[in-house]
Image 1 (cartoon, rainbow, N blue to C red):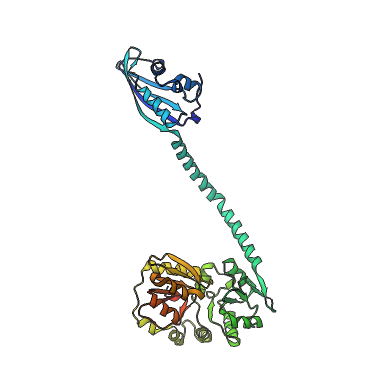
Image 2 (cartoon, rainbow, N blue to C red):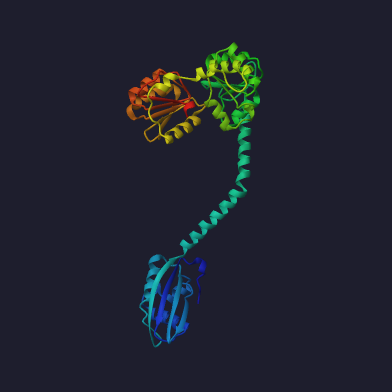
Length: 403
């Protein structure tokens, strides 16, 4: 008689049997075949189903105690759900086995595929963990190396002075001026593509021309050489912002987090000149003049809205994401991003959206025009790198130094 492979079974019928007498396994199996014969029609005849492999080997376990027999019956099936349920129900019509009264009850029909799926999931977890532990670090290193190589390929030469620069130096509204080629490469590595190097302490003519057309941030090393460059460049041309790498570090070696922190902390050229000129005469403390420049009593005295800690955290993250993009996030009351727009289109976008804007986070400077528009449309927060706007009772302007 043919047997069905346990591997191909989709369902297993589990039944219990109670017999008021002593019987053997062959008696039980014989009763199952004999008393169900002709009951279910030709298509579900157990003998034929077993010959064709659609019903597997019937397993019977019988335990005899005190003149009574109790046991279990299991029948594997590759039939569909309905047919398997019919075969299971047919077992319960058996009332006698040999001379003894018997009662068979089907406890459950097990879907073998469920247990197989559970095994697959558990095994997949183990394999994934092995993959992460062994392969991912190497893959990540390879990915970083490829990304770095691509960014190195993006570096170009700009102007008649053939200065090292990122690919967005022409199309970007704002640029970052650094000292050398290695600085440009490090910024490229971390996704900042609008940097250009002056290649020395003297300021090339190409840089002077760029400063006339772009919003310029000078980003120098945290050493005396960086101070000299700040003095030189502020002497020969107009710039908008100045920032430095952490003390004792160079732009070419700092991390992405340090780069973004430095760009968030950029200051005006006037403040930078005060810091640079005061540094040689003071050892551990900055001069009183710098504290007076940083103090803005008109902002501190005005009543401001109470910003929630979770809002402050999200504003800070969004502002960091926008550094160098000259873009703006427009947010609703749940801080969902309604859209990202170029800075040049921000005022018109707020006007078109009407009263649906709760906050705006952008890479730029808050001007009076934007504050007036925000007040008219009900915007509560303007979050930006810095501000030149007059204080407003209804709109809270939050700059990067407050975050």
